Image 1 (cartoon, helix red, strand yellow):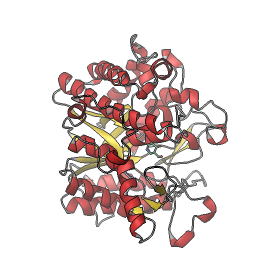
Image 2: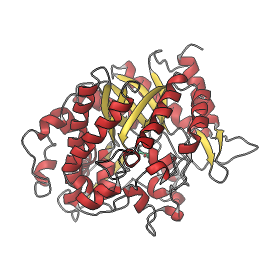
Image 3: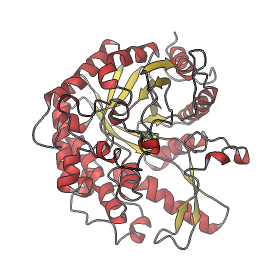
Image 4: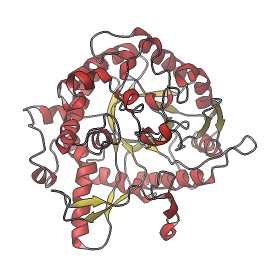
Length: 455
Ligand code: IFM
């Protein structure tokens, strides 16, 4: 830990998302989201878990603020639940929803913790999905701008850091191409439409934020898993280039270059929606920072039978029985522990995208934690965080403009289709009693922050 030197203005925080922690699924006038609906569909979530209660954070946020203070966090990244603010997605505002985030924000500021608010972390109001087809419909980008305006007018005097959208690729791919996340669609056409409309929504939201609070800072959070060729063959190398474009540059390139990447655009021309004049300009409106969520890398193989792309990702999840394979380490998500991924991502953004200010808005690991004598000894997570942070530090020493790092996650929570069994937290949550226990990694992270602050 002592080898890592982070400047005192480097921000260390922890992140969460509304649907994953809040519970109180229908409290105080909240409307249903696509995830409330999807998580109750048979067979969609591991073990039939739901997030109806999750970490009960909506009711226990004060205790959770104390935990954040105990961890000495500089910042906290949370998301606002759109259907708490607009139960129908648009139209009538639910004041009680706004009040909740207002209390949370005040609590953070009282504790000297900088709020970073994400406006969309996947819990789209169900009404927008049912009536208009959700983000397949470009009008949803306007509803998002309306919602942005309401939230920023309410909190913008206190929240100065805004993240418009979390991981457009994952929302589009898992929810509209693979069908494993809400709303559960499987269509390549839907995938591209949703990517485009989310990016459009980001651009419009950015303009709204700027218009209301010129002194605030706003950006987007992108998932980025570098894709490496599975073998040394030229065909696999080509497959990895396309897979990288399909998963990573599909969002980075429009945001920073104002265009979808070639040759992806050529190969996918039948699926890419009609792009209206002016869209790319809105999408590439300058952001104040880029948020990057980095966990692992992937591998691509050439597969002749995959339509158009001819590229197949082989490493996203490996079965638990193979965790020790090849001397590599894996998290309980089946993701390879590969700290160089975060270095590669930061260097790519530095060298190929103009070195914008970056926050790592998510990085962390799920392991099978257990409580022993009231403690959680999670050495694997400590090793994971140390390894990745060393690489963040290395990239920063080589000129990458990285300003902060948010651990995913503050506490164990509802991991989407994987349910509640995958524990990513610095804090352990006993879902039966809602007791919280700071894990050894939480104390390790706290110590890192103290060292950075010279305490
Ligand atoms: O839990 C998710 C989060 O909601 C988005 N990024 C990845 C995390 C771990 O899968």
